Image (cartoon, rainbow, N blue to C red; front, top):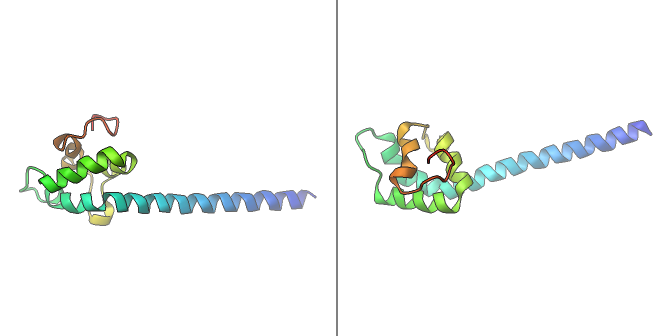
Length: 109
């Protein structure tokens, strides 16, 4: 009887853990989908030190994503966009304020 209970608990644990992993990957994919255009439009500003102001297209996407997909937006602002080679920098941290998105991530950004 004890072995049966252990096997049931182990099976439940494996199912829960695998669905959590799939959910995390799904969330990551969804965020990439929602922030992808923003990352592309902001890439020149974020990666070229000669550009000191984000473009209108960049700010338009920042504003839309920052207001609509807050969790994904904050994940991008706080962690960068490794898929596009965007690393956390002061330019990235300043982006919300420069584009009129205030307080979305709870840290002044």
